[in-house]
Image (tube, rainbow, N blue to C red; front, side, top):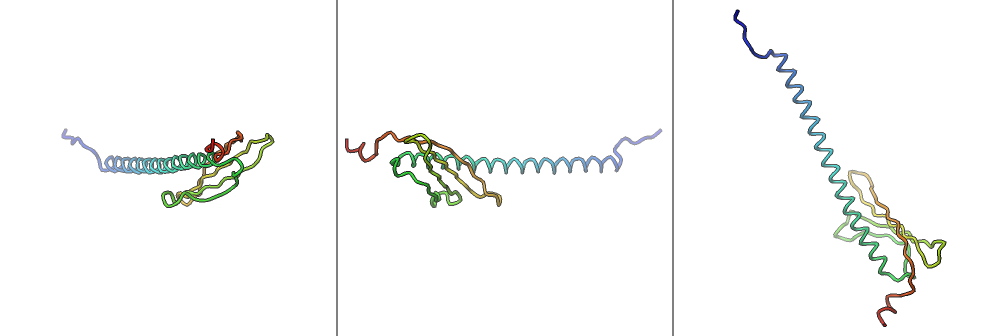
Length: 130
């Protein structure tokens, strides 16, 4: 009884197919993870830019608040912003809707921030003269 111990060709082929399928699935998962990180990075950057824009709006005099749109200049050319300023039912209170948009993977993505600003009766020009 002389039996050779080893693998048959069929067993080797099945194992190789399973390894290749596993590698393909692993590479797709890695690729999807990289895309998710990229989308997250862009959304984080948009949030940071939106906070800067809100701070710029808070500095303006209450009477100068108006709807507007634009971009973030040469530093962030892929991002744009739009503000919608509206009065509310409460006197001396305005609603700001700020939208920051960017294009990624041929899709327009955006974040929207809602903010309410109250007029405290102090203009920046009168406050600096005191």
